[in-house]
Length: 398
Image (cartoon, rainbow, N blue to C red):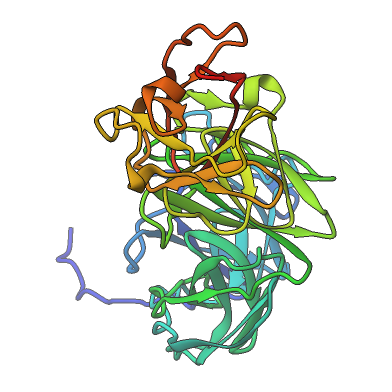
């Protein structure tokens, strides 16, 4: 046998025909591609897709000869399939990127756009807020923007402006914007901007609530309208000490039904009949609704005296508040034009006291119709401007 000849190295010609290169965004950790070439499918489960040079992707190149596209589906080699719900995927000749069911042309672009800047609002109404920002940049190109209200995606824009709609009047909303490119790379959020919408035109109801519940909620139904979701809306501290406050947009409604609660299942719903407030400003104190702003804690006692009361008689309040003095000038009642007598006391909410009405002495104290003594009258204030009407049946000395 002769000695071997010298070695020779031969490089084969490149494959002719079209090729498909697929970058597969890793849904399956070890993905396989099962494809059809020249009318014949690969043997199951197909061909393992090697890791790509781009992190998070696998990559395969397939020569499809004279064909112009490749029909394929993916699996994990263990029976789990992604076949586009049985319709399979179709890849054109050239390079494509597959990501969660979406095919885009070209190699993966993993670089997100820069964050939008200078987000601001240039106009608003009771139901809309208009936003604008400075454009983002991207290594390939920005295709659009996502607009968020809080953490909720509310819309998209292909320009650098957007108008949020369907908002509630006199309400603060916070917005941010993110940029997106053709490969679905999303930027970080822009600066946040908080905008309070305008007051809604139409009727409003402003309610001052004398705090029975320390952290009150109001559950309401405009008339007509729908109830709020329980427990309703938290009321905020008002400019009046001891009161919470809320302003509710009524639109064309003239009033609303209301119940109060503490947010923990304890309710004041007026014994099941609820409270009714009309448009405008009202004050609620211990179950009583009065029109207007809260008044300082006070009690006005109005006395209807017997018809035989001397016209020149002076009436006094003798009580536990003044040591039961029968003729204390600080507790002298004023005679009104309609013949009644009254006195207004500045007295704190929650004050309990006993009292009787006199003509200036115990001999002239109020009595039963038979002339016998009556029990002391008792009253506890609940706050706000209160009125107590009483009738004297008879004077003891008459």
